[in-house]
Length: 113
Image 1: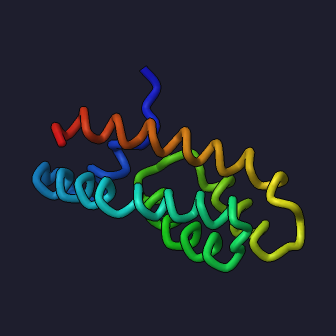
Image 2: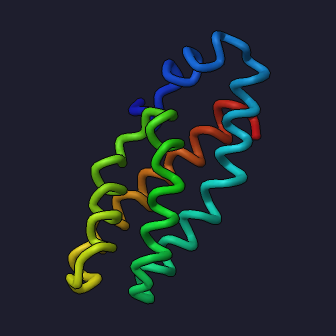
């Protein structure tokens, strides 16, 4: 089964501490879904500044969890500094939404949250 995040990355950060791993997963599940929702709304409302802020805020967590969505997050950040129509960024947003929703499911299962 394909994993949408890298448990190995987290284990390295946590130095094998299973309690700390669970805290990382719980914190991710508490913080990222509302930010993801806000970024989605900001893009649909073409609020570029807000879209950038949420994309930028999520970026370190996406990287830490080894989630394959950095290119899409970077594309959202880049779009926020252009005058391009939102249709140019929607595919990136959809990839981020799908990927992170899969990560949320996996984390809940893997850490019984």
